Length: 349
Image (cartoon, rainbow, N blue to C red; front, side, top):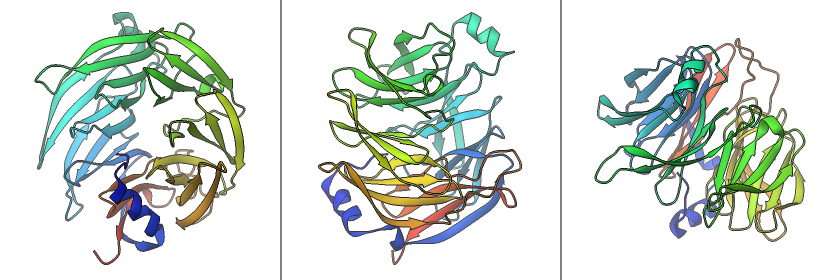
């Protein structure tokens, strides 16, 4: 959930990560790497892992109160502004869940692929739903590998969604894994398999511009952030690119080394972001939109990329979520402690 009002902007102008203390580390909560964490509307935490499970934690005790097992590995999970939890899976399914107290209900399963794609996905794990993005108008966009970028709108007087339209991806190697909404039905889409970002105009249903980017290849889902109407930031290994989305060009390379590689960006305000990296380390960064530069304000964790999990993935912060400025949750994927989550709490609340 991005922060937009002035009170929350002022909060992050006066508070830093140093004002947060570790409240809890929940060790070995998942048996595989955690790729997504988020807060529900009531402050409960959800985590999703490669082990097929979604866990919902009590907002006061942080004990697991709901266990949801998917049939396929979870690629991405997040919650909509209306509080609906959505999971994107390897295969062809998108599941929408309503969570209330200790109960959950699957209110809809969306299958954007064609029947042929559904069948092929039984044998080919490359068919998967990579991510969803909720647009400012409440519509949803799903990034569907080897198929397209699919738009859905909410049905009238319902929590369910119906198919609206799509931008079809014709070539197999054109797989979108990131999307940022711009203006006037235009989007910036990351194609990590092609090492490029493309500007998609859905009014014209065509790609209008392409920017090729070296080393832009990652399974991480949040490495692009629109800071203001002009500046799009993209984190790539040891640098952050500043893209002018009006002129559609790279205007600056900001070199920023945090042992290993930058894995995740979370927008706090138009000037502040949280930047997660390997070694379970993350920073609070201030962005100067005039000078197109960044400054590290504070940090948490250890700058260490030497640990590798038992599943071959480096220890990384692959997801960050913030609730009412009081709580921050991140995964903690560690070889020795399993896949855990860490909850930080603002001191003296």
